[in-house]
Structure formats: C-alpha cells, structure tokens
Image (tube, rainbow, N blue to C red):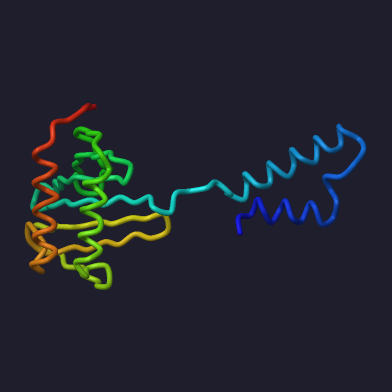
Length: 168
C-alpha cells in the first residue's frame, strides 16, 4: 500500500480532515500532502528499466558504451577511469526494440548468475529496474557465454547503426 493511502486512512480514522473550520481543514490537508511527499510516495512505473553494454579499459582507462532506456531513449557514453560518464550522443526510438532486447537478456539466463571478471580490457552489462541493478563483467572485449555474447554483439551493432538525434 502506498504511504499516501496509509496517511489518508489514518486521517480518516482519527477524523483529522473532518472539521467545520475550512481553514483548519486546509492546513491539515497541506500537512498530509507534505508528509506524503516527504515519504516518497511518487508513483513509478514498474516496467521501467535500462541496460547498458560497454567495453574498454587498458592503459587509457577509456570505456565506451551504449545505454538503452525502456522509454525509447538510447545514450552513447564514455568514461575514463573514475571520472563520471560523458554523453556522446542520444537517440530516440520506438521502445519495442529496446523491450525486445531486454526480454532476450532475461531469457538468456544471465539474470540468475553472478559474473565479475576483470582484465586489462573488460566488457560489462548493467541491467537496472526500479528496485534492482545487475552488473556483469568479463575479461576481454565481449562476454564469454555464447548466449550472452550474441545478445551483447546485437546490442552493440544496433547502437553503432544509429544516427544521433543530439550531441552535447
């Protein structure tokens, strides 16, 4: 149950909102709404997700990748060492292909496994939902399991074929 609903039920139970004085009702409503906002009752889409594929490292520490978001946004990025992510370009597309990639990743069996290998060059997949983040890394330029390696190559190829909508 959403915290807002709990607050509303509590308010009804103790009759905080029932009063003949409209100013008092207004103040109490403001407090209930403020409490609801502080409690973080913002609704989120349970079907929202993102995933990224990236590879790199070596002596430069340069990692390049592509992130796909469930709403249809695709972001090409790069990172150097511990520095933050720099966006190279973005592209908007129909979310159907992105959802298909996500389903293929889920069906690959990798979600139930933990893989954390590191090498001079490292390939990684990051899959995030509203409440979980999965990270897999492999030594080398792409994942080793064939089912995941094929998926990884298909996503990288899809990103490489896109034309950017915008660049910073």
